[in-house]
Length: 470
Image 1 (cartoon, rainbow, N blue to C red):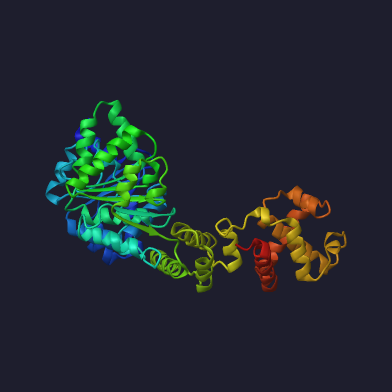
Image 2 (cartoon, rainbow, N blue to C red; image 1 turned 180 degrees about the vertical axis):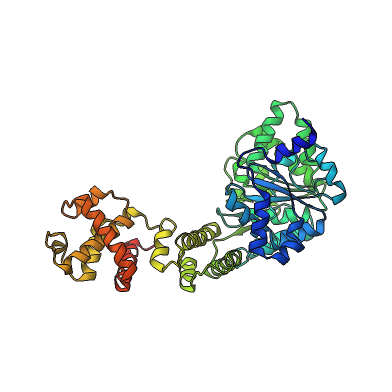
């Protein structure tokens, strides 16, 4: 088999391989012909890996322009075809060398300007071009960590080491990634998780290749280690890390570390290592306040609106609600708006507040175990001004039938109870009666605005009774 065919097989190593021509067509459609012809048409597909794709352009300028302006949108388009892909890497291939690529079985190490190179420690680098200083949104809770990271990028060894800690989903990895991106063109950058460092250490011992391990990690200019809290136990490995740490400090290499807790609270890590961490600049990222959550939500909504050609309409009421109620982490906040946008696109409608509460009920800590059939029945009876005995009776008066059907409908959508279980809670009614009630309310909601409003009001009351409030 010829080398050219080998390259082709690498690009099409699966029946589910990406169709780059189709993606180009989507880019032209979503981002416009002018942008496509000026920039995006210059992108060539190189290789698809398990969780990212490798693309090429002819100059560093084109790469930087595309990365800073269109990378997020390109990734969203790619994820439509393969959702497991989490990032895009670029390499520089000058047009004069395109033919050379066809004559090589694998991409050449010397010609790549990317953090991924096969069969070396660099394959563990996790630099993501989508996480940059430019798209890191700051507020009072993360301003200090952001400024310190920016300072390190401008003046290596100004703070050494820089230790950033905070809860899950607060932006620590984003900052480390931003530092790596800003420094990797002029420095040898290593961005690795503590877990991967441990794995590589053990692997090097087993293969009797510790010399290579030491040389690589001690010769780097910038060492970024994510989630250092996982580097616990294993005394021999901590010993090697300690000496690597000292060797890097001695040669004025920059070390940046992230963790979920302060240095003195790291479990099962040697005191002398914790002391080294605390000897640099230690900054924490607090939970985002309301102002920062609002900024993040507004920017994310605007980005999605641009990407979907102004087809997304999330009201200010819903944005305010999400900013108020989702207080855990930035990652949860972004996940919440993504869910709401998905609902909007699937059902081709702007969700109302009660629908948003249902979509986000696990994030809002409104578990279905708190929404009981008894609560639903009591709320509906109070709303329609009837007694519970009347609702559960066999009487078929119109003023009783509609509330009864509404309660059955709400039980079906707000709990995971089966039809027979619901029937038993409504005076042992047959499951066919339950189905009929649900379908009746669904039809009434479509043609009767008053019924639709009533159902939405009831949802809000049931989901947000005082005992269900966060």
